[in-house]
Amino acid sequence: MKNLTLTAIAAVAAFGAIGFAAPAHAVVINNNLYCSAGINAGTNNDTAAPVNLALTDVKLTIGATTYNSSNCYGGFGPANNGTATHTADTNDIYRGGLANPAFVYLDRTGTTPDDASSLTGLGGITFEITTPDGGDTDGVFTVTWTDNAGGSDLPITVDLAIWLKAGPQAAVYLFDDLLLPAGSTSGSGTFDIQFTNPNNGNENGLSHMFLAGRFGTSTTLVPEPISLALLGSGLLGLALARRRK
Image (cartoon, rainbow, N blue to C red; front, side, top):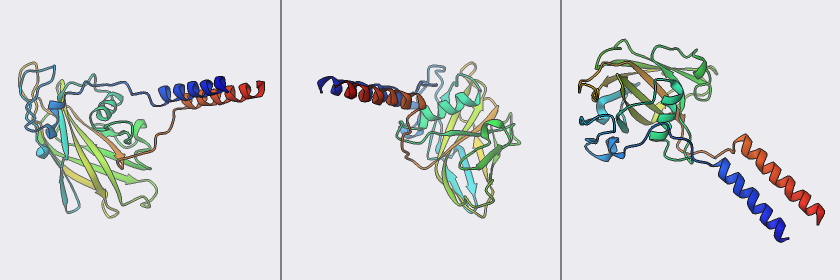
């Protein structure tokens, strides 16, 4: 019985270690770069220039409601401009632990909802973010959503993360609990870049905007397939040990 118990403990330990391992980080977090930290005058490793972001730098109007961001983070230097890296950075910055649902890539300026990475969107609702003001330090943008189930999934409440990428730096703005009503298909917004290029201290014009999103604020963890396989192997080992006894 003692060996059986030790085998069970080992199987559970292996399952926990792999199934709930912390994800690799795409960006090193500097807590001073959050707007919620206060005046947001912190600096990151790339620049000694002060950063003065504000919740009002990015606004989004849906129907009759105008939303300011609920938090923001920046400026910081992403590893690259790829959608996978931007999505991983978003989760490092705003997910707040594995108990919360992950953000998924929705769209970036210069692509459409038909982009292969965003076909599924959120629950079948696809998104497109567009702006006519690429290269400017401030301007307007539009977020459009399409319910591919013919309107049956709206209204919904989502969290959106909107990136401003300019030169080698970026800032990301979080919008909590946005209501997407059944009667609307788009929202209009404004942006104002408030971070500087670490190479010359100037504000670069907008390179692109990036959009990530999620439903809700909590989720149930689902073990990865490899973890399930290990768990099955452990249970099989327990069964064989019991038959030998």
